[in-house]
Length: 315
Image 1 (cartoon, rainbow, N blue to C red):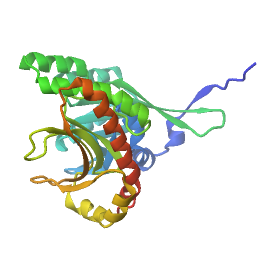
Image 2 (cartoon, one colour):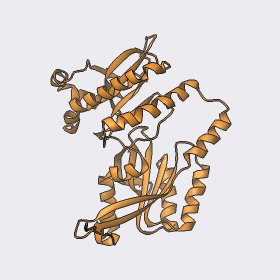
Image 3 (cartoon, rainbow, N blue to C red):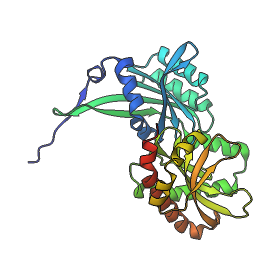
Image 4 (cartoon, rainbow, N blue to C red):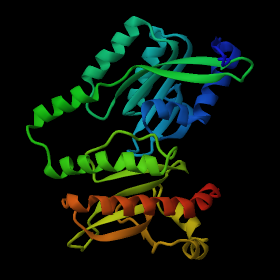
C-alpha cells in the first residue's frame, strides 16, 4: 500500500506569535503569496505606511497597472475595527484595491465587503482573504490563502458596457490579443507572472523583482511615425535616475544582448525605457498575431535574461 500523509492545520499563533512583529513583515516580504491568489504581480511599497496619525499594515503596487493595493491583516476572526481601518486606509491612500486578511471572515463582514464591491467601479474593489497554516508530518508550516470575497468583475464590466452603449473597436481588439497572448506567455515563462486576466489595453507589464522597474510589451505608435510598432521594453517608472545607473553598464549590456536596444527617456513623463521594436505591425491584422506574439515573447525573455542581474544589482 502507498503511504499517504495527512495534512494538518497549524495554529496561526504557532507560526506568527505576534501579528505586528511576525505576520505583517512576513506578508510584506512575500508579495507573491498574495499575488498568486489575486492574480496580480505585486511590488512592495511599504509596511506600516503612515495614513495621517494611523498606519496601514502593508501597501503594494500592481506592477502591471501601477495601482495601489492596501492590506489590513488580523490573525483572528474579522471585526468592525479592522474593517473600518481597511476602509480608512484605502481612502487615505487612494488605493484601487483593499484587502482584508484574517483568520476567518465573519458572515456580516463578507456581506459588507460584497456591498462595497457593488458600489465600486471597474478596476477597483475589496477582497476578503482567510489565512491558514498547514503541515504534513514534521514538515515546516506552509501558508494557504483563500479568497472568500472578491470583486465581481463580470457584473461591473456589464454595467460599464451598458452605461457607455459602445465599446472601442481598438480596445475590443486588444482584449482579444491579450486573451491569446497571456496563455502562451505563461507557458513559455512559467512562474514569471501571476497575470491571467486579459485587459482592454494596448500594453501590459510584468515584474522585474524591483519596485518601479517592469518588463513591458504592447503596441505603440512612436512620435512622428505613421505605422504601429510592437514594443518590448524595460520600463522604469521613476525615470532618469535608474536609467543613468543602468547606462553605466550599457556597453556590457549591449554586447551580451541579441536585440537592438534603444535607451529612451520619455518626454513629459517621469519615466524612461530601454526598448526594442518590431515594426511596422498592424494590430488589426489577426492573421499575423502568431508572428507578433512569438517575437514579443522571445524579446521579453531576452530582455529578462540580459537585465535581470543589472536590475538586481541596482543600489
